[in-house]
Image 1: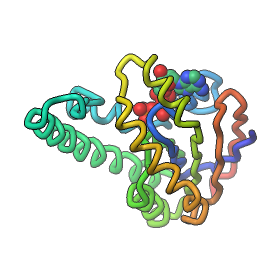
Image 2 (image 1 turned 180 degrees about the vertical axis):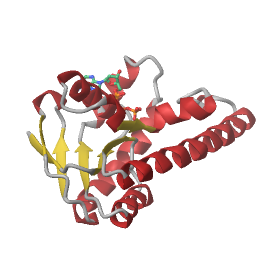
Image 3 (image 1 turned 90 degrees about the vertical axis):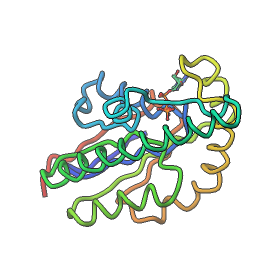
Image 4 (image 1 turned 180 degrees about the horizontal axis):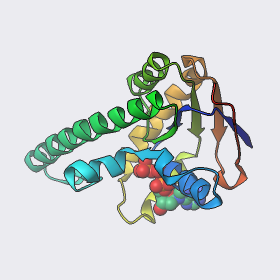
Length: 191
Ligand code: DTP
């Protein structure tokens, strides 16, 4: 699939855990289609501010799970605050930025549509549409599995949301399930 990208703005990856967002972006960097500095990921921002990218609170007993959940929420809030500031700066500098996070809930996506509008740059979405069974199989083989419950919850939200995404105001929306078939075409026109 050919994906046309603007010169500057935001490229929002959308998909549950294990849908291959980071893998796709890594492949594009490796092919030389995009720069490492053009990718900003919520996991990396969590590590930058809180030393971890994931806390598996769902596997703990109730009291401990509550504490771990709170910890994860605090780290995530700080991580997204940094992430959003970097995106805003990059938009002001007329740079292109790929945002690697799940963006499953409408408010998560609206925030970036608003940032793009406020900075007069376009926003494009890339939906990673992968079957639940594949998501679960990939989770089992992953170094830090996100857990069956979490993947199933995320998939339910994704299934409900995906039909609305196209109408949210993106310059273009691309749906992909196989990252190896992606061809990137970038605009050279800075206006
Ligand atoms: P998260 O939101 O949890 O960071 P993601 O970025 O959507 O997840 P990753 O690209 O990090 O997903 O991939 C998670 C795991 O799935 C990893 O072990 C690699 C595997 N994976 C990703 N894409 C594919 C694919 N196309 N085929 C097989 N396995 C894949």
